[in-house]
Every structure is written in structure tokens, then in C-alpha cells.
Length: 124
Image (cartoon, rainbow, N blue to C red; front, side, top):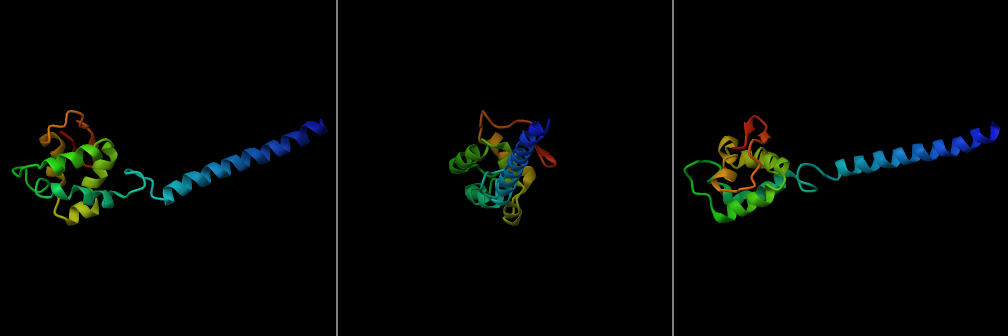
């Protein structure tokens, strides 16, 4: 039995090493900014929605084609789109989240994430 115990010990070390490496990679991704919008922060992505500024402040404002294009790109990840609409950058730009969540519908995006919970709001 002494031999099998010696064989098990290196296997245990390898298993522990694999777990440590895995956790290190996971933590690195978190630190590296991998989140709702990948490696870009929602605040940085919010700048891409500059063409949507007036449409995000008033439901009566026209939604430009450039705004719809950016919303369509971000809408491929509903988590990211939601995070951008609720970001500090959006808030400081005067975005009203209750109005901003109507933009995908106002753009007539067929593949919009209808019913997706975005904080206290639900995408129509």
C-alpha cells in the first residue's frame, strides 16, 4: 500500500495546482474587466450611444438610424445593453432609464430582448 499512497500524493498536488490555476484565471478575468460588456466597461460602451441622447430623454424624440444601429449591436448582449442604459455615464448624460429601455422597440428591432429585466425596468 505504500506505493499507491506515493502515487496518490503527486496526483493530489496536480489536482490542487489545476484548481489554483483555474481560480487564478477566473480572478484575472474579473480584474481584467470581463463583465457584462466583455472587456469594455458599460460606461465606455455608453459613449457609443451618443446618437441616442435625445431619444433617451424623451419618448417624443425621433430615434436616429445611427442610434438604432448602435442599440442593435449592444442588444446582441442584453446584459450589456442593460448595464449601459443604467451606467453612471448614461445617468450623468441625462438618460432616463424608463425612456431608454423603449429605444429598441422604437427602433423596431425584431430580435430585441422583449421582457428582459433591466434593473427595475422591463424591456418592452
